[in-house]
Image (tube, rainbow, N blue to C red):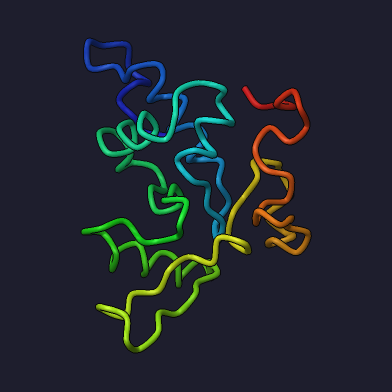
Length: 146
């Protein structure tokens, strides 16, 4: 992983941030989880806490896979994120020509990952009405999520 928390020093990551980054590293290429999805998956904190952990410590993990729930690209990082999304074939919704800046959004119905290993191959094929194939914690007990 190469994160500073692997070395037991005073620079160690806060435990919550380490957990957030661990989840970010699990998200398969071409898929995304929202800040709220990660908080729900962890059973701790909320979208703002996840966002704060990603803002402070997320540069060493695939940060572009942790997104806003509306699918808009992270302000100030749109072009860098877009390059990653295109390289990973992440489903996008092209912006209409009248949209300011013509920056696409993520197609959350197809791109959202529910945290179940192997679900990436489905690429949203069995997504429910909310755009998730069951969603984080859909098994009621969090499954093997640690």
